[in-house]
Image (tube, rainbow, N blue to C red; front, side):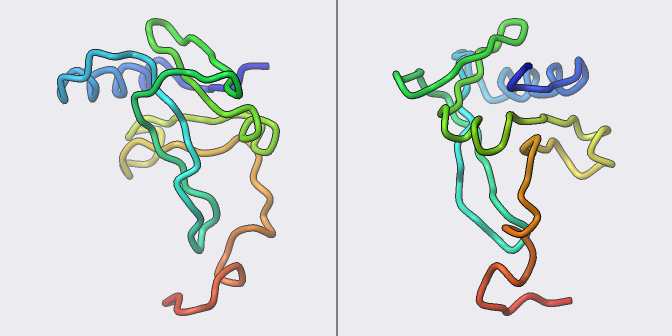
Length: 112
């Protein structure tokens, strides 16, 4: 099973973003960036793999993810702007524990 699910259009959009920002390194880490009312948030950064990581090559990009994140979320889906309904590129876990998201998971203050 692949740990990264990315369509050709999402791959090209992501590759174009790297080129537009003059980022030549093609090893990209997916990391947990914290938690919000909608659950976990993930970020992308250029980084080298460590011993606790798994890697997957997609065309000329190498994605690096901590093994613990793969165990918990079963991988990640990267959507293009179009696939995300015009909301910009999106990075989502393949598996999400619904009890870990929603306004009940924080101290309140959510506007409805």
